[in-house]
Length: 428
Picture 1 (cartoon, helix red, strand yellow):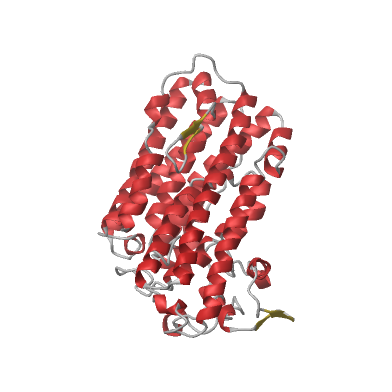
Picture 2: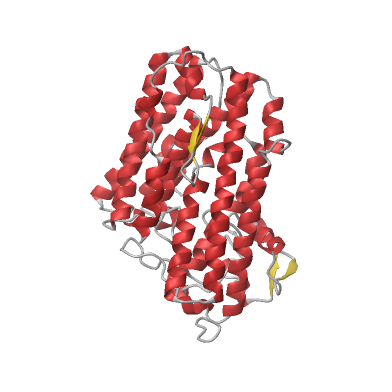
């Protein structure tokens, strides 16, 4: 079921390949048209993410109305299906401040799950020197203490969940977003680098046969967290609307600075964020805590769809959930008009990155080896899959940088110690 739901989407979103763009446009688009289409694309992609999250919300509400193993499985599948369309938006980050203001409420990671609910204290521990809220368990508490303030948690609201994000100045305190919902649906993954994801029982939500206490509060938290995510994603779409903050800020810029914003997102996601923080760091540390979708074992899909999103934005072409294609003038067109050889190189490096991450995805979808298993020390095949993905993403980022130079632009790409100074990582 895992491979069917997510795999069905693959056929739609990756139907195009870069060679289709290998011919120089008859008339190179105007930079302003590319910039406007980028904003239109962002509105469409965040709108699709909000819409699929609404679909997920309906399935989760059905589960909460009638908890069972079957309805829980459907809720998990709905989370994975909706996750696809959010991951494709991530290259709008790293340059658009209005996006980053909301993104922390939507996709903050990693998180200390003991803030939200019960945990297995044998594997998780009972306290953390870095985080006083490590095992605060909001679901099991009517109040918690953050610094000198006592916070009333008796009523679970969107405002409460947002207030938990980075509470006490700790980034791992996360109360809302994709990963809070993921934890509530799957529970902790206690399998380490062995096979198996989180296995929370549906009875954690069954008021008649309640397990692990606080089933009513847990159901309320999941309901509110899902409602909050839909609202936040809708806001992310709205900021790209006709009078939205992100669109307005971008269109106020002159052409070159605005184009630099686009390339900053593409390069930073490809290099520092995905290749570095999400992939190479975990490979250096052999640490399953560095697995992005750690409760659901869905990381192989999240990484793949990040790359799909990089290509969506670069080529100005996005496949909506209903299969229709939204396309327009792109930065790829501008580079091809400026320097066809560099455009060819980016096409090749982008295809190679997609192929490398597809190998990781296919391995995970097959059930042979999930991403946390790939991270295990001594797993040569898993390490090679991840390293090949890292190398391809780095090569893609460097090719994009050459495209940036061809357009006579300047950008600053996010870095990562795992790529730039690995010895510093080992000392942590």
